[in-house]
Each structure stands twice: as C-alpha cells, then as structure tokens.
Image 1 (cartoon, rainbow, N blue to C red):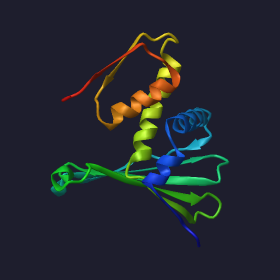
Image 2 (image 1 turned 90 degrees about the vertical axis):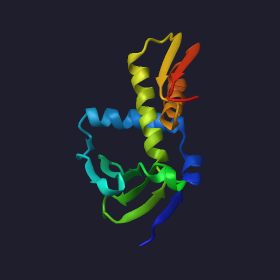
Image 3 (image 1 turned 45 degrees about the vertical axis):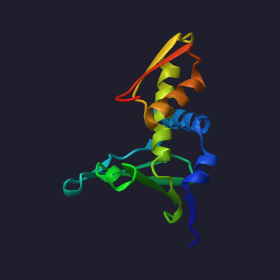
Image 4 (image 1 turned 30 degrees about the horizontal axis):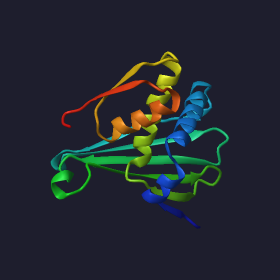
Length: 165
C-alpha cells in the first residue's frame, strides 16, 4: 500500500485562498443538499499539559476520498519555542478505506478553511459595495480572513484590531 506524504511547504504551494474559497463553497452547498457526511467533533482535553485535541472528519458523496483532520494545541508551546497549534490531515480511499495520504500541514489547512468560510459568509451576506471592513484579531486567522474577504470584496478601507501592534 502506497501512502503519499505532503508537507506544509508543498501544501501551501498547491492550495491558497482562491482554491480554499472554491472548495468551501462547494462543500457547504453539498452539506446543505444532504450530499455530505459530517460527524460530530471529537474533543480531547489534556489538562495537565494545558493542551487540547480536536478530530473532525468529512466525506462528500461521490468523492474518491474522505478525510480525517487532527488539530491540536498546547498553550505552553510558545515557552518552548513552538507554535501553539499543530495538525495534520489523513486522506483515505473512499472505496477501500485504505490510507492514501498524510498531509503534515501544521494547521495551515484549518486556518485557510476557516478564513475561506469567513470569505464565503461575506460573499453571501455583505452588500456588493463595501467601503470598510473590520477584522478582530491580527494573528494568522485575521490574515486568512482578510485574504478570503479580498477574494470576494474590495473594501476601500480595512480596520483591524488586535491585542498588540
């Protein structure tokens, strides 16, 4: 059995804000039509290490693959010189259920998908002519939200608020 390994740098070169927005739009539409299987989230707390783990899965009917995502984080990581969060995605053959790919994305796909969902919400709910947009948070997620927003709207001004400059 052959399993393809992809690492964050390669994943970033293959999937960006535009691809994420298109994929999220398609997935949400399929979910609304009942064409997706989306089980509940598994949450695992590890209190003695101030860590948490979330496991999510999804399958879009007719797709050749389904995926399982692990996103985790430890609030103590920055003191160790590590990012708070990590993650990976496992891709499985939908017909045989055998593992086909491991995507070591370090949470990139999670951040990108969340930003794309914000961009989709703006596209569906915001007026076409946007003068100003506000973003709460200036970390990774704020940046992904902005990138996704700029895929669907061109505000004249962006106001971002964060805990620090």
